[in-house]
Image (tube, rainbow, N blue to C red; front, top):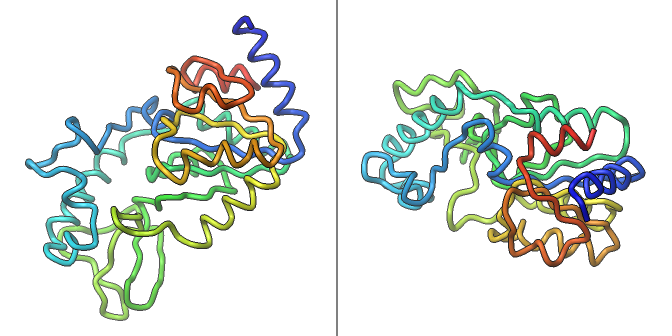
Length: 240
């Protein structure tokens, strides 16, 4: 099928849907310049993300972990949503049942105007108190010293670290959206990190028409109804 026909087919499905579910991964944020904080390109002071993003690392050296997150916040603070983020926010405003599930922690979807967002791995701009459980959005957090909650407990980033389970309420909401969606749009995800990797398969098994948008073929490509190659910013804008 020609590219234009694929896009036209995807557009028709999306705008005829009563319940649209969108899953986004690192690829959509990469178009805003968000770097990879994992792997060979993610070294910081000779530490890997896998060495720092754990409960054990935070217990052992919270100052080091917060210094790393402070650096990440500085990097992300200068970046803006791209056309793909804005296109998804526009889709939500058009009034259909819309749920956005994201693997990203950068908060760019919210900056673009999306509202109904389920952040599987948390949000780097939020803090969570292990003592009283309060979660707060703190984009201007002072990290010149360790941040403490009013209850006296040391705050931590509201991020799902290696070895931790996804938040039950977020995962439950995502699974409910998967089971009720009639169209699912998968954007910029490598389809290798669980449970997000199998979400499209679950949605398709529940009757959803699944559309993949990605520059490259993924393990999911052969299992979806329609796969479109290209950058998310361009393709999602064309879908509108």
